[in-house]
Image (cartoon, rainbow, N blue to C red; front, side, top):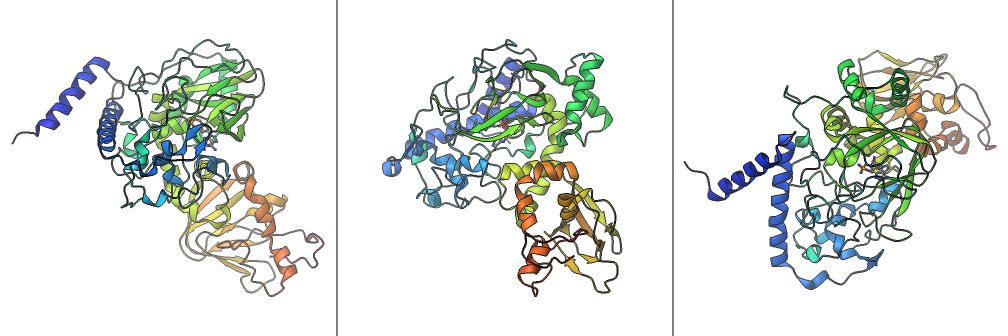
Length: 517
Ligand SMILES: Nc1ncnc2c1ncn2[C@@H]1O[C@@H]2COP(=O)(O)O[C@H]2[C@H]1O
C-alpha cells in the first residue's frame, strides 16, 4: 500500500525542516509544523469562502473587533473577553451578536501561533529560540527587555492589521464556551483540529536532553531557594527535579522601574519567579499590546516576591496573555527556559490544572473568580482521601487547612451536641472560619463515606482565596442565624455547607444573636 501523495509531500517537507533546524524537542517541533500547515490551509479556505456579511464592526482600541471575532467567541456565554481575565465583564466582545454563529474551526482565528494570521518568527519553533543568553541587562525604563521581539500574528511592534478572516462565519456552530470560556483566544484547549496541550508535553522518556546548568554561589542559591519556597509550582517536584530546576534558573536583575519584562502577544520564551520587587500585569482585550498610552490595556493584577508569571504561553504554546512591567527598582527575577519549564515543571502543573479545572468551576464559592485565579488555586491544591469514620478536622485543633469536597460525604459534630450539626457533600467547603478568624476548630468533621477532598494550606488560602473570603464571611452561619433563626445551618456555604466554625461567639455585626456551628 502506498501513502497518499499529500502525506508524503508533508512528511518530506517536515523532514527538510528537521534537518535544517535540528530541533531539541522533535515532538514539539513536529506539532508546531503541522499546526502551521493546518492554519495555512485554513487561511486559504477562509479566504476563498469569505462573506462580507460581518465586515462592518465596532472598533476597539483602533482595532476592528471583527478582526478578532474568531478569537473572541471563546467568551460567549460568559460575557467575558480578555478583559474578563481580570474579572471585568466589559469585554468589547461580550455582546457580539455573531457569537452564536461561530464555528469551532473559526475560533482559532486570532493571534494564536496556529492561526492564519500567524507569521512564524525567524526561528519557527519558539522552543528552539529559548536562548540562554539574555539581552542587555539594563534596558532603559519602559523599554522592553527583549528586543527585537518575535510576535505572534503581527510584525514586530506593529499594531495588528484588521483581517477579514474572522468575517467568514459559519452558521452551524457547535462551539459553546464552557470550561475554557474565559481564557484568551489563544487558549483554545478544546478545539478539534489542533494538537492538544496535553500532547504538547514533551516526552519524558530518557533521551539526550539535559537541563542547562547555571552555576550559582551559595548566597545566590540561598536566595533562590527562598524565592521558590512558597511557590506552588515547585512544591511537587522530587529531589532530582528540584535540583535540575534550581540549577537551570538564571538570575535576572531588573534594575529599573517601568521595565517591560513580557509583552502581550509575544512568543513565550521564559518562565519567571520573582525574588524581589513588584510587577504589574496588564491585559489588552485586543489580545496584544497596542501602541499608544493605553496600549497595555487594563491592569489586572500585581505580582510580588515568591510569585511567578509567564507560564501560560509556555504551557499552551500560545502568545503571551499579558504585559508585565516592573513597578519598583532593583528587582530580581529568576528565569527558566522554555524547554526546562515544559520538561520538568509543566507536566505537573498542567495535570493539576486540568484535574481541578472542571471541579473548581462547579464550586459555588469560587464562581466569582476568573479562570486564571482558579488555575492558580488548582496549582496549590492537594488531594487527600479519607475513609468512613476518618476525622478530617477535630474540634479544638488549630486550623491550618481549608477543604473542598471533591466526592463523598461528611458530618459535622460538636462536643455536647448529640446530633450532627451539619452534613457536607460534593462542592461544599469547610475549615474556612478557623483560618479567617485565627481560631481553633469549633467542630469535628468526620467522613461518612469514602471521600476525596482538595485541601489548601493557610498560606494558599490567604493568598489565593482573598477575593472570596468576604463572601465566606458573609456566609458565616452566625449572620444567617441571626437574620432567620429557622435557616438551615448548611445553607450559606453550600453548595457550601460549612464547618470548622466558630469558637469565639461574637456579635454578628450588631445584627443580634450569634450562634455557634
Ligand atoms: N489575569 C491574567 N491574565 C493573563 N495572564 C496573567 C494574568 N495574571 C497573571 N498573568 C500572567 O501573565 C503572564 C504573561 O505571559 P504568559 O501568557 O506566558 O503567562 C501569563 C501569566 O503568568
